[in-house]
Image (cartoon, rainbow, N blue to C red):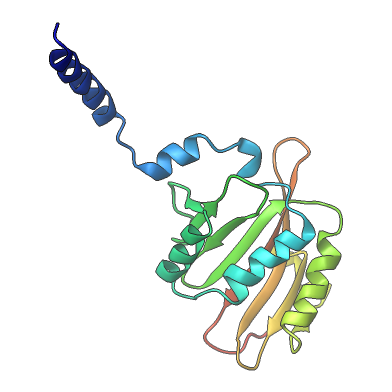
Length: 183
């Protein structure tokens, strides 16, 4: 075979193989992500910085949020969340981020220092937030929650979930409402 013929056959073989696997770049990147980085062990500082960037200061519009997340190397998981939102992950130690039209959440493995760091962050970022009494939280499965008022209406809350095995995840959630929240 002549070199040109070899190249032509090789091109047909490669193109045929790729056509059946054309899943798009997100699928290929997600296929190579470490399982431990889907919900990683983020430091307390990385956890609140990510929340601040994407949830507190980030855009409320899901499409604008996606552009910001993608610019920060995040990729959306293929399936949508129950509320229609999207979950974004990155192959490093930054927490997963979920966004929807009503809110935003970051999630990572539970680690030492996160709870106190989140409390300090909420006090600084939302100085007029009012802590929800513990007896009101059980029905909502929140660990801690604060009601926002003033320019912002909504709730900032933390939640822990225990996955299979001994892993527990820690989430910080910002849920926006159209008006004042009553608890």
